[in-house]
Length: 110
Image 1 (cartoon, rainbow, N blue to C red):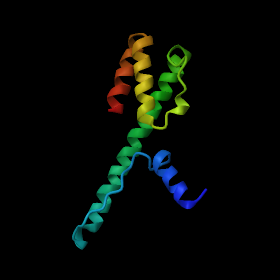
Image 2: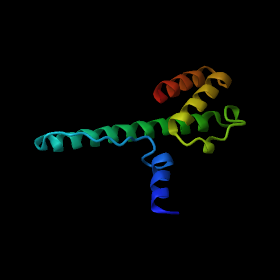
Image 3: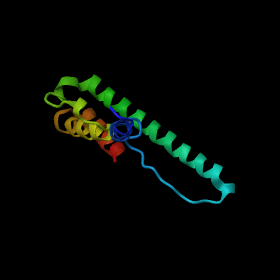
Image 4: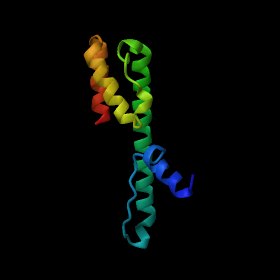
């Protein structure tokens, strides 16, 4: 696998799959401030993804086979996609608590 293929794969399904490259022209004095903002955005984004994954794991632990009977979550590349699928399954097949958890997953997934 060439270097370009690895970079494309990383951007498509790796740690940078949800990130977009941005180039801006700013005064030299403000460069550090812009970099700090970007780092904060990345931290917030990663934290949101981790929390979403914890909710997905919690839902699967509680309801397991009842909601994920014929769905292969490993085929979904994005945590947001997984959250939408699990959230809809919880709302359709679960009890009242599952419905609430499903709504939370859908809201968090955007």
